Amino acid sequence: MEEREDKRGFKVQDRRRFSPETGEARETEEPSSPAEAPVQAAPTAAPTRSEEPRREQPRGSSRPTAAQPAISFSSFLLGLSTQALMYMGEIPAVPGQPPHADLAAAQQMIDVLAMLKQKTTGNLDPGESAMLENALFDLRMRYVELVKKGAPTAQGSEQ
Image 1: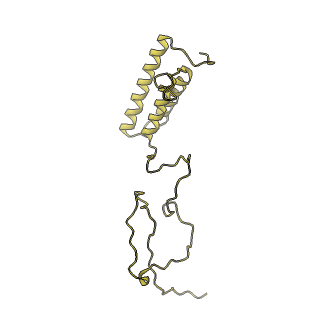
Image 2: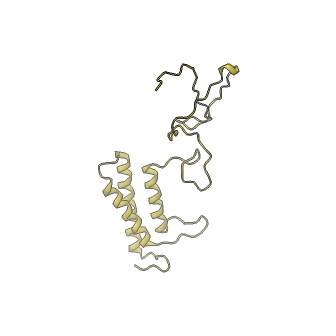
């Protein structure tokens, strides 16, 4: 029933080694005397995502790290386009190995990109929209050229 403010003063100091905004290492500042050391209050609630300290990511983690940039719509489109090119036999699946064509899989990747274009109409910025349009045009033209040439399909697949 007693409602009074706690008059004890304390100083809250962010002691994380990395900046939550940039993820880069901070310069550490050590307190000059023990009296200036911050008093830590007991946590009242679970920390939010931005308040949690950065932890080293386990291997195989899909979360971005300093060496791995965050995924963007443009990089997502680039990945799908690269997969389509790989299925068309334009890019080898494994470096050092000859490329193999799987036109059915290539057509499916082109259809996925076309579906993305349809579902994101009006929601993309002009650069993303142009990138998607150009990727679709280029992949469709390459696909038509391969079909006209009678490019072989992957073993075991039928057209």
